[in-house]
Length: 272
Image: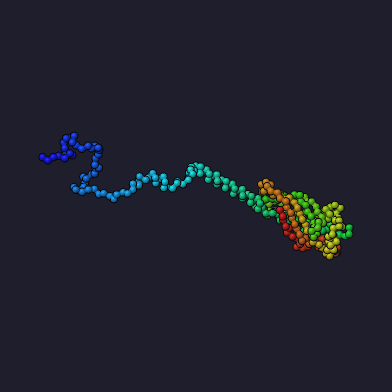
């Protein structure tokens, strides 16, 4: 018999020392492989698998999450929208009422229907005269009435005041017409005479002697606007200007009587 190698010796003392007593070769399943064949081996990996780098990639290469606030609850959002719609509706109603109060009411219309002059005397001692005017007042608003108070009237000639007076209060219902009668005395009733120092008296006297004169009528008053239910909700200061009132003398030239010429009635300008 040949001599056994140290690895084949049955003597335990002659066996080489093994520092890895529990080392085993990797197990491969060759049950389905042909005898003498080996399992396929892929290309060598130069880098560790991707899952080894998950922590690094996840924490160093991902963009920061977007800052998103908490999503409102459905109940809170619904209440917010309901309150917003209610506020918008209230604002629209208030705006409509304000526009109606400011622009929804038509101003009254004034028109001079007649004007008579009596006891007209102009001379070196001054001017005496009476102006009696009748004005038609129209209210085109169906559900609104006008109440006129503190009515004051003035008669002018070329911008110079000849006389003034105060009139009684009156009113015009919705969709109706009213009449305002005005009587103005020269000098405002203080003796019935305009002082001779008025530089326009001589010119007015010459024009009257020639057959007539052109006068101006001004009215100032306070108007109360009342709804159809009797609720007073607005008050304005109203000014009425009636210009170009041509009065012709009656009778012989220089007579103290005169009246408004035919078709001489004029629509007056309104200022509120």
